[in-house]
Image 1 (cartoon, rainbow, N blue to C red):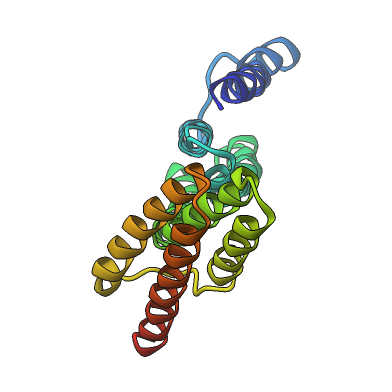
Image 2: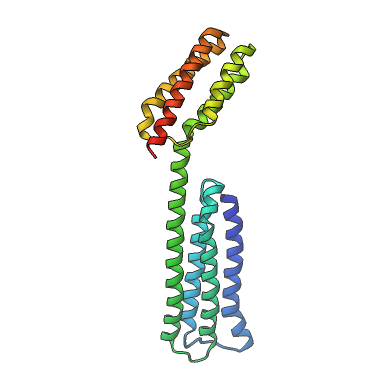
Length: 233
């Protein structure tokens, strides 16, 4: 993400430099102006603030630790970029109109900046809510996902067809289990974890009797957990 932001920052610097060149170099050379009056400075200040705000929003978005959270933060870039364009348009109009009262430029640009800031704040809050829900969902589904991987691994380690069939029964029971965990299920899930370890030991020892016994007990525990999951919804 840092490399992407560096490229974005380079583009931002070019655009900001171009904006300043147009503001100060071109008028002085083409019109011989040495003094900028009216609403020029209010327009220039607010456009500069919009540039800085847009860069800050991009920084917040690109510092996300993974692509999924970057996706949630993309509205920050879009909204701030839209606000920058609107500020540049109206700010440029204020700067270009001769003798336009400074207070008019301030009010116009301030309104645009305020609406843009509100939109950015809402987008950031929405991204944080969605990200928090996503993190919570991942935590709640981790147990069954981990158990699925473990049970699938037992099938691969089974040395006989009989043991493999027992492991497949466990895998199917886990595969079709409710993926969402709950704090109220902690005791049942702890028992399931212990039992899957017992099953793994039996499979590794190539003990068909212990494998069948542990597999049946594990399936019963999984079914009980799933019933309690339904009660908690």
